[in-house]
Image 1 (tube, rainbow, N blue to C red):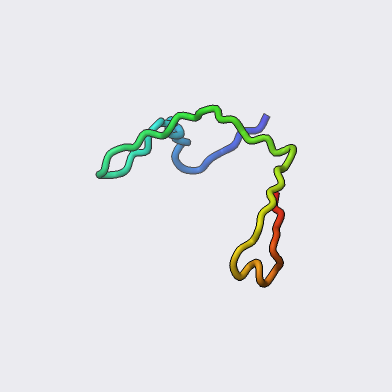
Image 2: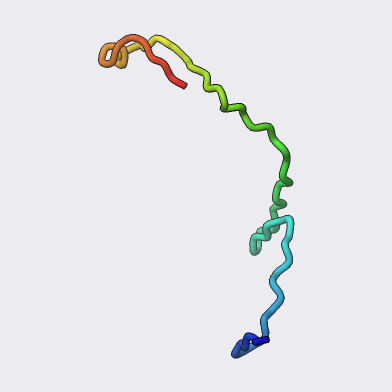
Length: 67
């Protein structure tokens, strides 16, 4: 088996994860905890129909449809 040789100082331990951000000279801010949230159902898009108003109606017609 081969070994990796590192020239210089031995590898330091990585920093431990923390639950707050420390800002030098200003204190710390806690990170928010993750929460479960419902995602919208996008399998069936909703179609909206409407009537344009103003210059948009004059230039492009009077009605529109969007998803």
